Image (cartoon, rainbow, N blue to C red; front, side, top):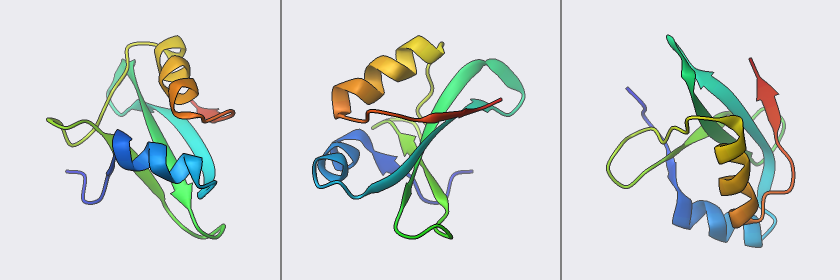
Length: 83
């Protein structure tokens, strides 16, 4: 269960304020066909917070290309990928 997550509307506002320290894309545990996007706010020891959808506690995408399009639409210019 995801305890803390961030919705895309909030994420867009944070990106526009340059408050995002890092963006990381990773695979969903147990499902290599789905990808997630997490962001780090604050200092280097701050933890990653996943992006959620309005209906689901964790937003997923079927491909890295789809995650890239979503990130670009929000103004995220770079992210790292963890396999």
